[in-house]
Amino acid sequence: MNTAPPEVLIVETRRVSCDGASGIRGGKDYRPAALGHPRIYLEIDEHGYVDCGYCDRRFVLKGGPADGADQANLPDISEGGDPGHR
Image 1 (cartoon, rainbow, N blue to C red):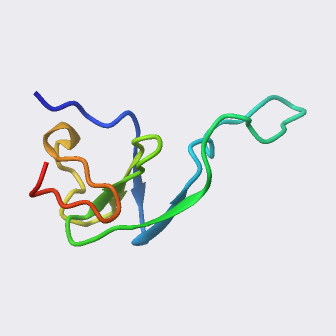
Image 2 (image 1 turned 90 degrees about the vertical axis):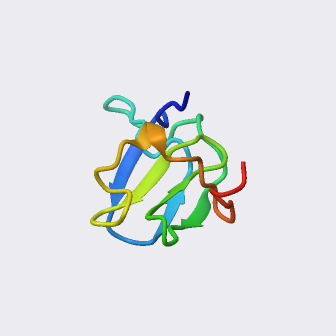
């Protein structure tokens, strides 16, 4: 049984960055979150999506083959990963 990634972001570019905390915001005296991970850059390939190896956030290319797909049925693809080999 597959499970959907914890967070799916639809993006318009094949190159994305992830720091695991970019969506976390504080109150009126906002300071950058201490949560997260080192910023990494990922490239979406012909499958139309890529997963962050740190936080499992999935980036789906808008209009690509994975856009609108049931994310729970897609294998994890970290940059450089091969979905044909698990």
